[in-house]
Length: 305
Image (cartoon, rainbow, N blue to C red; front, side):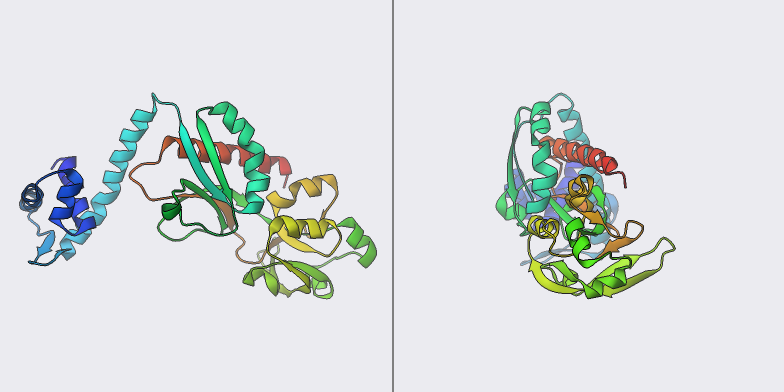
């Protein structure tokens, strides 16, 4: 059975109509129907249940289509990779990331990206709202999470670690914070997300984990503003390593518990590149993902965790 027939079967399963697939392929509906009938005869299976009003996969058809769908996608990927071998990335890349991540981890690398890929224009949309990629015509999103869920394809750009930090000025005024349990007696700066408001989690080298209640006067919705409040000495804060790395290096902040894993959600978190589910990954998106992964991995190694 050739690839064209297999793709026709996949399209019929997707659209649920011979007529709809015929319009996509610019064929006569009877040609689509014959292709399906020939495939069923070859396989010795009934793939679709037909009525005068509807077309639906049979149980056998669902199993078969679920197995061939990844193979068809790989064929498309192989074709695109071969075509890209002689092409240069070009066009406009629309991408989105949180305000803090865009500011700290994307914008500083745009100059180097431009130098390497001069024919790619970047339209960056920093926002702390998860935009709809399909509706917004967005090619690439960077999301911070333990592991993304949903229909988007994802790949991890870097692993993140969370740190509890405070400014030297705060510690000089309020005294040292020797143990996470001491945080219960300090006005902590908290991110305006439910998981961050009331308790932070810690894990020791031996795997033992525990939670500490936190409270304070300030709950802030933006990571950059939260970091600035900590630098200004308003209290301890829980933030990602990529957001506080420069402040730690400059002495504006101090990591309070460097030997502990800290989090408000999961201990295994990261920055993920997400893109719409397509038959292939556009070259301009692929090079941006690879570029950012390399740049961020290098930057993370320089933090010297």
